[in-house]
Image (cartoon, rainbow, N blue to C red; front, side, top):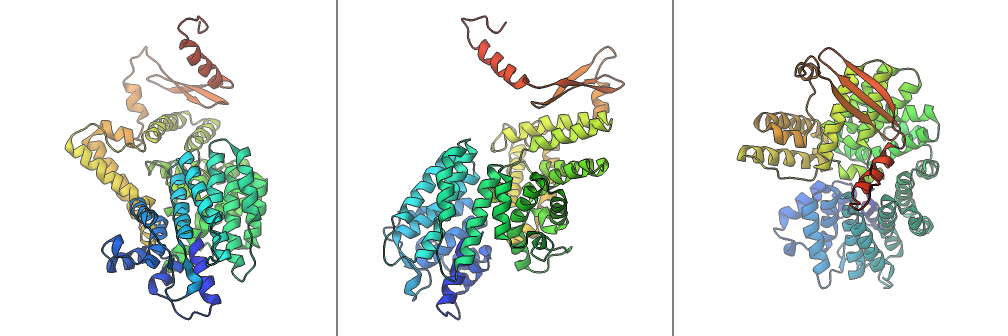
Length: 508
């Protein structure tokens, strides 16, 4: 959410301000890339940037996911002996003292660490931000603004605990967040930010009923909102403002649709997912796109449309395989990182139900390759010659562009994704071994079968804690056996523990 943007608009409007600096207008509109361009274009170093502009520059870097620049900016502010400033020079009610400025910046740092799945560090930093803001009792501080800034650290602390399976410990933070309130004409913007944060928290807890209650409060007529221009049903988004608004609202509408789905209101869920999938902006939001396709596929399968369900899951796999790593900013916006393997598992299940065994085998193999890519997703250096290293560096640069949330990045996402695919093909030609570690290749079942001798069979296992399949491949055909996978993970875990006991025969 554009927390600071909304508050700046409200506070300035209340004081009867007719105009404001252009960088402030751009920030209030959510045009963060232009804020960065304007401020850095007129100031060569951070030391040259006036404090009131740093107040907007640091969060602008974060909002467009320029993480290194944001970190540099935040570190500079936190090291400053007295970063107090009027973010609108000449208006004393916009004065931000040292504690507020530093708490504000630390909140963004905590959100960044949460996106990077550094949950313990995010929790600690959010606590520091909360302390700075909470202990700020100066009479110079605007109470409504300060309360609004408490939303982010409380949300990060709650999510950090939930992601570490400590949901019970998150309850005090949820309760305090729920109780935040103040009364002024800017209250509606504050409530929207607070309710979206609570929606993400309940979504992360998989408490879809409460998430639905919160999101329905946030969107007064949720079903109407799904079919209004808030999410544009057009082939070409007409303005940059439309792109920004669509990118902002899409995660909320996904959470709403998913909550309807999980609470059994399938008709509203289907309408919501269909609206999202028809919106061109979702093509630039890969994490949300494949998650929406997966859930919509389940609805199609339940409603006796198996071919449609399978096609949607195949589209979801294509999106997953078009990106090496999770788009962290998108995962944060919907409160969880989706389980990519669940998409493959569901597709294999549906294909086998339709007796498409060879296709199911292909996707089972792809799932294993994807698991390896995910495990190595943060590794940027592999052994190889100079050409391979250069190719990998180019791939990493293109993938970093997919993490950005500027209007230009969103508009160019389809082109960027195409460049990524071509770069992967080039890397596979240059260094196939390295390419296999950073992308999922094609599976040629006929070529595989031809490598088997007449009396040889290849047995591949695939599944999860419930369903387990044994694919049996020979030169002529691929068959499958359905096995009972219940309890298998626990048995394997116990066996691994037993063989570590060198003075025991428990493993036998």
